[in-house]
Length: 334
Image 1 (cartoon, rainbow, N blue to C red):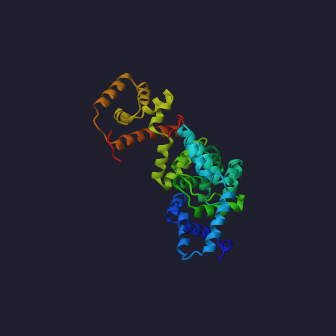
Image 2: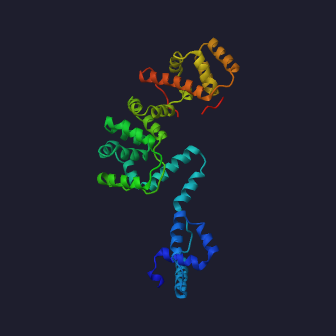
């Protein structure tokens, strides 16, 4: 047996045996678990290394070391760590998302530069799960435009599927790859990465015009009420009331009794409290302040439930065209 007839993996196994246990252990520290499993499997099949083979493998290694002298790095991993050390959490998240999309799904970048109507036309014949994965990789504004251009009966199904996506396995990516290749020749990345989820759905719906987002959400509610409720919680929160103009806020507050408002304000920020106190009568504000001071511990779940009931009032008024909302984002005691 000569080194030239061995595979790279077999050469590595022979070389590590020649280097000894301690040196091999040090090298293993730099390898992934899958790489270690592959090379140790080859090592387990070796019972004898002839002297001439040992010499040939070591010499081959030394030649390679000289030929490829320099710095070896995992460029992708290095870049991600470098981005993570940039100041500003929001900026880091955006840059990481763009970086991962770029290295893992080069072909999906092509979709990002295509007109939304054209993309929708290419995707509308695909399975909703395929469409959901594609939209999950797009920038929110572009993804929302593609979603809006899809057939109405498809939108809610796609949104629901995006909300339930967490990570995509290489096998699923491979199937998506095949499906897309027929239409637009896309080649998806093989690395598993996080896509989709409720946050992605919220971003897409927030970027849709008119009442289209609300219509899609109503369709999702018929399929999964809990999912629809979770999406609503992320789309507009109780704290977002502080962003309303005085007239709109007063319209919401007229639908809320003082007891409910007091409980909802238990965990509210000072900014929101002051905004609300400035839009109700002085007498009502003083009563609520006194009640808040006298209020003992209450379950956080009760407070959140009351806050959500007020948010629903605001969203209902928006659906009726009476105001325009901005968008925001256990049994503990508070």
